[in-house]
Length: 102
Image (cartoon, rainbow, N blue to C red):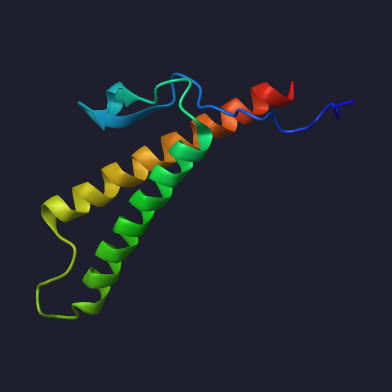
């Protein structure tokens, strides 16, 4: 007999976790969203890889000191967009977990 709150054997993402702001900030628009029914382990592995790449970029920027090799322009936008994507992936997996436990 399965426990009522047992984690299901196949946990997936849920459609609709929107990310990537676009347009004027007052519009509160999101351009992209996570697809549903993606294996949660795959989604979390992707999120982890994206975070590692972001950590590496931030580490390099932090070690640059005063030699103008820090995080600027396009690199700052890349970090923002990567973190927005990872946030949406984690939210989507969390929504899938919540639905599976109901």
